[in-house]
Length: 357
Ligand code: PMP
Image 1: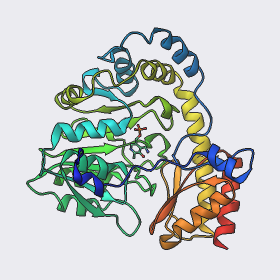
Image 2 (image 1 turned 30 degrees about the vertical axis):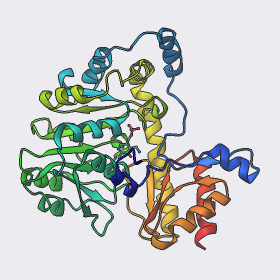
Image 3 (image 1 turned 120 degrees about the horizontal axis):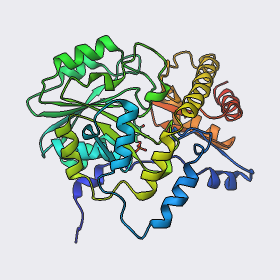
Image 4 (image 1 turned 180 degrees about the vertical axis):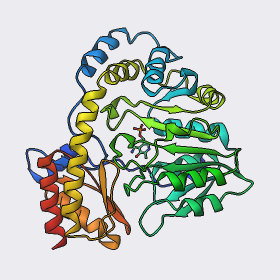
């Protein structure tokens, strides 16, 4: 007998980056380089490991379900009221909770495609209909077309800024126009997982839209803050929306370790800025070098770059792996490559040259 939903058969799996340990073993190398999951390559921030170690001495108790201290620290850092904040087991879980809090079966969820691969999975499992609006010719969101795709059934729109996997970012005038055009009973979720790497002053900070009640900003501590393994993200929304999310969230899903690690990480904002500056400098260097091989690499505002290789994407990924570098190919479309340390990036650029010349 069938025990699970038949519609899940058609759903793609979320594919994590390949394990560098496995690849190194396969190739007989001391180590492989993983540039596939948009992590920052500099290790945990100072003080994080110690804070987590200290906190886990109390793991026989549940964590603070209200996440009071961490929400307070986030509120101070971002200049918002703690009532407007909800935390979760990674920002991807918060996106899921937002869909759960807004969409009933048959409602529509609009997003650009290609974008973050978790969006279709989140939408499908909620029973909401996916409305995918193709990226524009520059591989970025076509916000005018996204606004035009809104119907009476639309409950939520996801704007990924900067966009994973293409690195493109929407600018203030287009985002303002888009927000003006979207009905105020449609939730606009601006997923800013990569906000800390944005250098273009014309790319607006979603938190600047606090006077628009239907805007939600999604942030994560997995990328610039170096806590991917702890699973912690947060959102900033109107108090009613944040309260609805806190209601649908799995109880205690912001773990003891995540709360402690995040609190320690937030004291390291200067170090985060320093690391992001290193990543950004490398991003510009890698982009310039890649454009000699693939002229239409788009400008990236994130900690990765996109190679629009079309049908050559999978083969390119294989050549990189054969040289010990794990990247993220999307079949028939392109390859996303995370910015690593200068030495890692050099190894990748050598692999890219071997693959494309
Ligand atoms: N949003 C975007 C655009 C992402 O790329 C990612 C991570 N790949 C996430 C959200 C989820 O991050 P996390 O669940 O680790 O917070």
